[in-house]
Length: 108
Image (cartoon, rainbow, N blue to C red; front, side, top):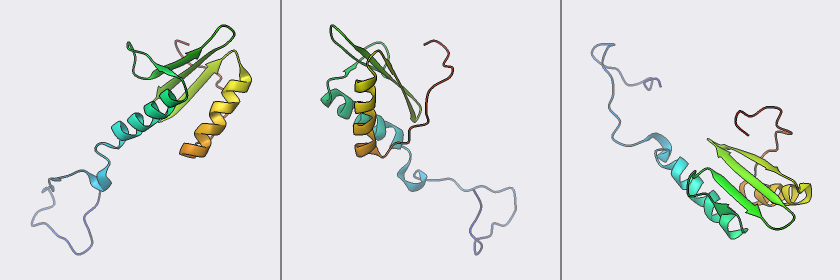
């Protein structure tokens, strides 16, 4: 972060203390996760009690898993139609970008 051109401090070692977060980003991650969670729960995904970044949807024939990793989503499962469907719905609601197939993920 740089000082505005018209602002100068008496010595270059001084710093400015922020009284609030820049651009309202302090709680942005929490709000995004809450919005994503309520969206996925409304589409019959179940939030794990052990890990708040793990959502699943299953029945007799399919198992779909969504893992939230910071601001990325990892989708996995045995029903490609459901994965494509939830990807399309997520894109309509959140304007996501599909980065393609995952080549490696530790622990999955």
